[in-house]
Amino acid sequence: MQNLPGPLKAVVDQLSSLPGIGPKSALRIALTLLKMPREKAGGVGQSIIDLRENLCLCEECACLAESSPCAICADPGRDEHQLCLVPEWDALLAMEEMGIYKGRYLVLGGLLSPLDGVEPGHLEIERLRRHLSKGDISELVLALGATLDAESTASYIKNLVDTNYSGVEISRLAQGIPIGAEVKYMDKETLKQSLLHRQKV
Image 1 (cartoon, rainbow, N blue to C red):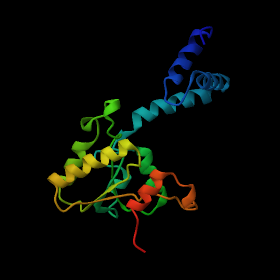
Image 2 (cartoon, rainbow, N blue to C red; image 1 turned 90 degrees about the horizontal axis):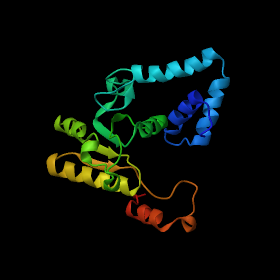
Image 3 (cartoon, rainbow, N blue to C red; image 1 turned 180 degrees about the vertical axis):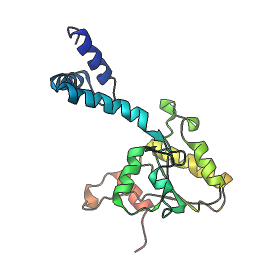
Image 4 (cartoon, helix red, strand yellow; image 1 turned 45 degrees about the vertical axis):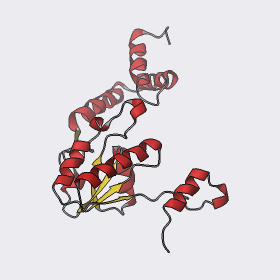
């Protein structure tokens, strides 16, 4: 990549600094932009600027939105007694696509990860405290995933709630065997979670 013309190298360097885009992919994207009509390439650039200018974090749930409060938080039909915690905004989108959950959300902005230096102060814990302090929430739904970081985050939040906020029930998304799978093909950890979180029938 050293022999690229200066302007092209500058774009490749910027693109390859994004997560999931390596130098080769960045070069392909840059060359595609270069081949576009000027107006279309300008539109791509302008949309990136607009992205920064026209989006904000919702003051209630910390999700990306065009205005604050966002459409979900402003919806009077939402159950204000349920609060679903998700690690990132894309998890909120996945939950919403199902069309089943009708409560409110809080985007934590990540998961606790001591090895990566992510501590409670890096997450939206204070915003969670403010929500819980209002006294409206009766159920906290943990939709954090099943990783070690998710488990440590869930444990931290459970301790926080149990210590400071009585009357708040904590639930989590069920874990275990996916639909269509057979027990004999499951790994030990999945089977363990399935047994621990078994349901009555």
